[in-house]
Length: 325
Image (cartoon, rainbow, N blue to C red; front, side):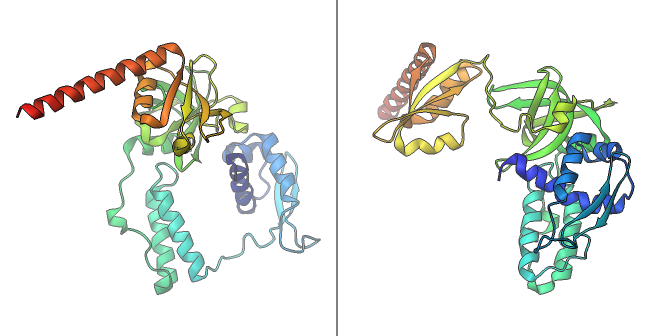
């Protein structure tokens, strides 16, 4: 499922219990609390008209009475009904909760551990503990806790962030939007004031975070859309590497922001990849070994060749020193 569809599904599932708990709330107030635009909220409410129980006829579908002044749920289709878990469902939920706890910033770990304990107590022996004891769970880093707190309070942040693609540590002032899960990693989606655009900051690469006194004020388009949820959106200001990838190394396309441009009969593929610094890209190419051949640009070919020769020379010296002893 795409990030856009999964994020909207999560919003839709949360709307019914939210409006049951807040009957008559205005669209503007609800949108502000839910972190979406009023336009997006009204679109989600219209989508709920088509959701409900099997049969999908009158009396089955969710029913609402809503305008921009007031929103009320008149029929919940059972979403507010107490949930009774089977042992299989309880076990699956425990596994999911423990997985979320291991992903920085996705949930409050203390609350998650309390929920795990309650589910295990309710499920009894039918759903045995599926992970390490709560006492052994890793503590949340101060930086991640600060990010979650600032997001909850609607405050801007100062970040010290390591960018793997640029191989640099930078200072950023950002306006947080939300925390998202992309490709099994958790990210802070935020408006970066220096880049003047929406960026994703991987939470385990945030070295330090300081909450500012001023409110988070991202532009409306940053809040309402899924801008920058593609991790490797093209930056035309960066140079482009051209690489030939051997058939047994095609797997690297799943791990690096590479664009497939040509398939060869022998199964190898030519790809392009933008990079920030020549030093970082040449180190990456050397690290991938014989599975990747650098085709261009010329300065990258030269840098890789020079590094390769230096590595071979160092190896020969080490071997000669070992032979002498």
